[in-house]
Picture 1 (cartoon, one colour):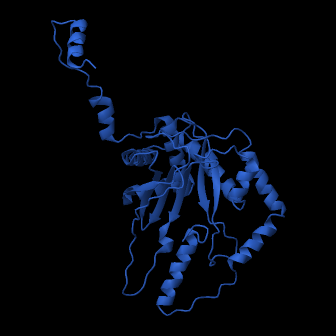
Picture 2 (picture 1 turned 45 degrees about the vertical axis):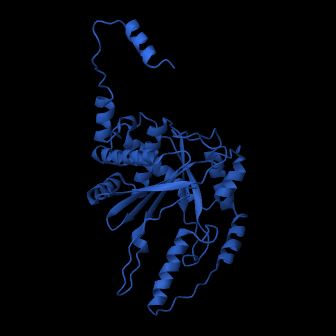
Picture 3 (picture 1 turned 60 degrees about the vertical axis):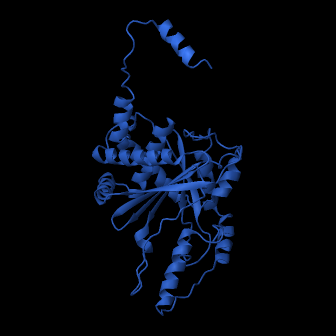
Length: 336
């Protein structure tokens, strides 16, 4: 289905209801339909709460809006490309447990912790210290928990991962920003884009080009007697943004999915970058009190290649010839 018809939570509801009907169960009545949500949203536009949320987001983006400048393998197309692919990785049970323990120790959710690491990862890739990352929210008001439709909204989370900050201090900043952003999550993203009157660039998305998605997949496990279900990794060929990192927590493991635009990035680049993210995650677990610029992001094999192999510049050369002699010999070998 097109995203204008159903959001991800609606898909989960649809499958849950199918499994219940398959087992001969009766579905509870749905008291509110999507048209009721449309009426609810229209009434919200006239409230003080809506005006307050509008003011919050307008203030958040009242200054110069940063544009992320990721190092690309190919020139960015004039028109934004949606050709994409995806790479997958799974953190070990020990790494997942350590991340959750760190989140508890620092008083944040796993979502906040991963978002903070994602911001630092983007900072280290770009050198930028002002970052806007999109993130989806359910957008469902009370009473619409079992309704089908496109309720999901997008919020634009802005953080400043400055290199001299301690990670713990930056994490606290992310926590406060996330809490405030979620308190104002009902304001429609498309209204914000119109309100800001952004200068549109057809090679990019409005306001941000990277996203972060966190999901607890344990909530969408389907069970039927004598049937088993297992996840299937789709071979995606589209990408709505330059890069989207999706972290999925399920059965004690954290799966990472990195979707990217194939017209600007090579697959080997994205695979290497995902390795950077995993290495930074490990380093943050070991020491959450180090500066952002000191967090180690290079796997040992790449560090060996960059620091040792690429610096091995010793070579044998003729001791009885001058530079001019060698230059003339090379000219004869390759005159063009």
